Image (cartoon, rainbow, N blue to C red; front, side, top):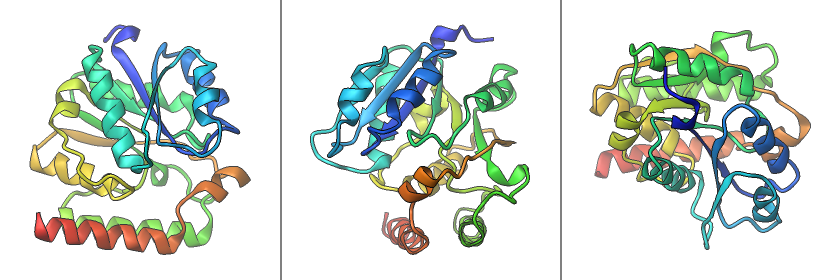
Length: 227
């Protein structure tokens, strides 16, 4: 069982001033090593994050969530993290799901654990979002050959060794599919576990549009063909 100091939670953030402090404080209450990566927000996300005990990094220009995750993961590994957890900044994720993510890693059976909203009741997911996410699963299974039920869930945990192997090149939202590709490429032991996603009015307003998700899939496919 890794010591709590070895578990680092990476929170990429962009224009989350309204909620970032509450999200970070909730995580810090149980996991004292948190790094927030502010991706050149136009509001006071950086100021709100600095009012907590978290490690706070800042991109000078907006590069996207993939780049923010890469920065946060690299920093965590540099600080001696044994396990890295990625956690969204908009309040959609539940701190209560982190122990479920950590269990297969601490048991030594898996290198990376992926959260899936579809392993629990999907009734709370808006219908159009549910359809698009299901299509994304089919797309990922076809392109990457990995059998998962949720391809765009930012709640995941990985060992330091696995985190060091995963190469994130896609700066923006296509990184989610890229991580799955990296799991296959490095033959990492992975498993999905059920997690809860809260679809608050605020979180819905911050989420990716359905059209944007199709654009993300297209960009990932183009990168995969030409890389």
